[in-house]
Amino acid sequence: MRTGILGGLAVAVLTPATSDSCAVIGTGTQAETQLLGILACRELREIRVYSRHVDHRERFAERLAATADIEIELCDDPEEALSGCEIVVLATNATEPVVEADWLRNAAHVTTVGPKFRDAHELPLAAVENRRLVSDSPQQIREHGKRHMLYGHPRWNDIRHLGEALSAPSPEEFPPSLYLSAGLAGTEVAALHAVRRYLCGDSGT
Image 1 (spheres, rainbow, N blue to C red):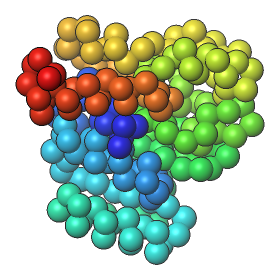
Image 2 (cartoon, rainbow, N blue to C red):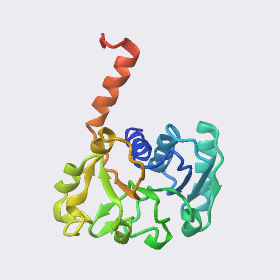
Image 3 (cartoon, rainbow, N blue to C red):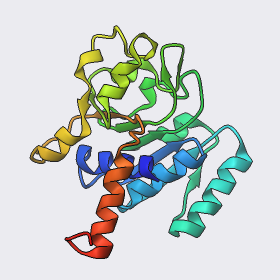
Image 4 (tube, helix red, strand yellow):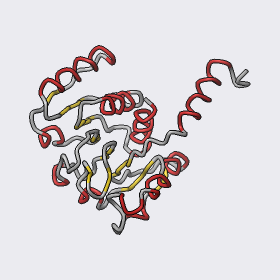
């Protein structure tokens, strides 16, 4: 849930409020929590989902219908799922790209939750070009060093912290963006602190 909340927050601050179509590639727990995080801050008009196994797609749709009372369009092809969508979530265990950069709408926001290593990554490197690069922990990404898929890439030093987007004024125009989820464990402490303050009052006692 913590990772999903951060993904939802990224969508909230990196995309226009009018962005209301979402494609999800993957049907596991990470895909589900990312979608729930987005739904917490956006009313989506259209949701499309693709994974390799038909039964996984169907179970995913059933779970979300029961949890969030939403309808999901199940797609037999990843390109069909991405077509025209303004928000794209990649949440797979794939060790090679699951989509092609040409399938992404030019202005689309992309979140990648799965592998991001030099020899195993779900995102095509071409999708990095011309996108604003943001992460919940650029420091953690850089700790991967040569193992990370972007190490040595011209954009390696362009990854900014999500907190910078939170503190900046809302732009009039939103550039296409890429959120590199690192799954920063320390955010659980901040989340628990916020919940405690909510339940116990501002004093936290």
